[in-house]
Image (tube, rainbow, N blue to C red; front, side):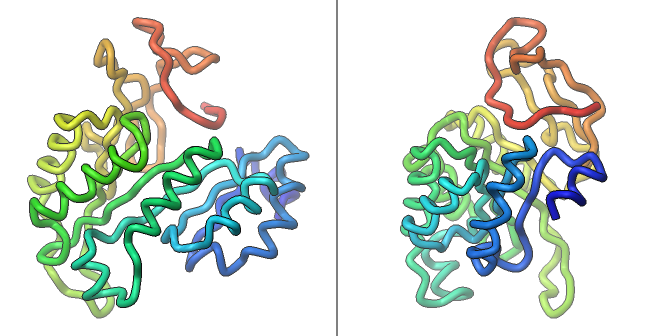
Length: 228
């Protein structure tokens, strides 16, 4: 896996589908090998592992943790059952305190978790357990397979983004909305577009080598190397 990443010019390894913690033992072996070759390691997770497991992963070389937050307690009780949602936020906080890069992603699903109270819950806990610099993504849902609720309204996503920004989140984002201005990274101080995106592609990169805004010199907490 490490040789393949190097062969194709990847910056790191990402363990995802389904839940990466199911590959826990494998990750403990592959992460140190990746670090030896200068690669980063990240998880795309539901955030429901033990803190002991998180610590072992961090010691093995885990650099970043992206957690999918489904919604508030009511959403977890209805759709996931027997899940302690507070444990997920505490894991995010624990990972952040260990020095891992942590991002929260909330897939907004029509008539499931897109009401204002649920959005407020996500934003408030983001600021309570993490901090204003941790990225917070609101992504668009599209009907697929056996779930047929209508696709998330763009206006609802924009409302969530703007509310997060107003409450103090410095780096909110929208996802699954190709070409939207809220895909981009903006300097919190001078509002310059420091990273412009189109889906998974970076079309503009205005950061110095030491990750500072080229316009005003503010530090931007971006991790990983950009290979344009």
